[in-house]
Image (tube, rainbow, N blue to C red; front, side):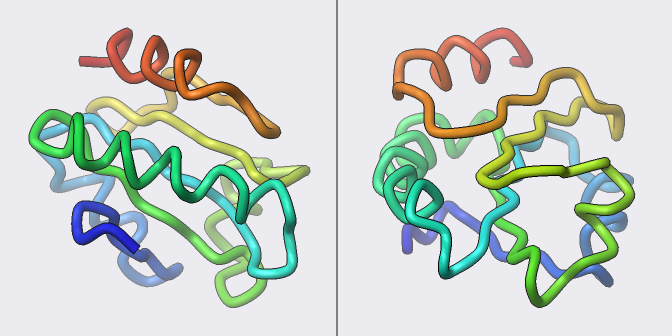
Length: 108
């Protein structure tokens, strides 16, 4: 996994939202989810490209059920974009890298 991607749990999720000075993109995923695995290399590439402008994080929904429940995550992968602690965009399912680039640029 790219060093620019951080792994969050239920305990540190809210703390990051409160303290981050950058927008955050959170990938809600599970190890058994095929599309979640497929989007992994795209997220790594985006973390390398935009890591100085946005925090990219992952939350394993099996190990951390509280955070996805708080944000009404119904399916995975779900990518939620936060700015100043508030949700500003949400994308569910496998999407092209270009769509994610557009979403990132829109929150910068």
